[in-house]
Length: 357
Image 1 (cartoon, rainbow, N blue to C red):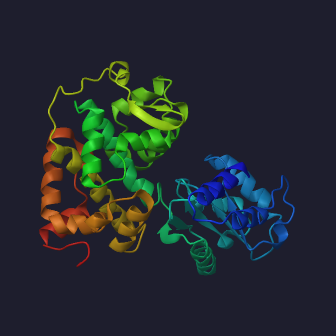
Image 2 (cartoon, rainbow, N blue to C red; image 1 turned 45 degrees about the vertical axis):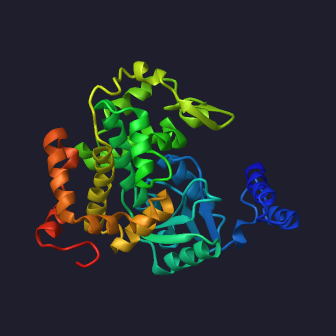
Image 3 (spheres, rainbow, N blue to C red; image 1 turned 90 degrees about the vertical axis):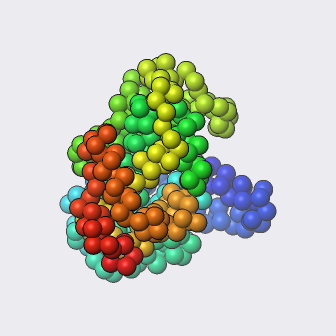
């Protein structure tokens, strides 16, 4: 309730909401510690901790209180919706509904179809997302779904760049100059090192060597740093506000910034091209239907610069041959994580683009 009131109050202070309307909106929230009233609701969104066994237990409990035909969703960022369906008696009425943080500001919602999810359930949740003034994108079940699967190699590559001798400032400045709303290391601070560590392990287990966590990010596990929420990450924070880069992290992680000169273009290309490569695999795996779904998800879910046209529109613009050539060069230098996806090399060889076949 406090979180909701703080969000409404912020809108009031900015003149985007009348105080009377904020009070009215608070009155629409009916808190309960039991499942009272769940029998009349049309849609339930579960948002408990990201642990499969906990989610399964809660979903099984809540389903007993929801009317037949009521839709249940899970706000999970990476856990399998198909596996969760094994915990419910009506799997056709269940799907994923992944909101992005901070929920009151981020427009994207990933609607995740499990193996047994019905079309009616997907339509219902899609309509609910639109009513909430969110932008829904339909994705099929798979580790990381759409946005987090693409973000994983991007954030991981920031760790590899640090290990190769780039400074925190070099990495973050290069990507903000490219147009990202914040640098990848600043984003890791925002996400929290504990959360990103868990996500990184999940992605490594799912996709193997190309998503092996960078040694720098693994070394963070031994530190007491948590990122922004703990007041210390790659940056220092006071009162929740970023102050400056914490230079002591270099010695703590045995890093030597500036030991190797990496150009701004190489930093940008290494970080962005691994995202293009993963997006190509996502299309090949059928996680989303079209390149437009990828670009919508990346713009609305990560703030990928709209002036670039979207991740895959940008790839088309600079040329898939360029992307493949650079990935092959980086692959020779740094290994398997840069190996171009077969669908990407195929399109480049045929002179095709993502948007034109």
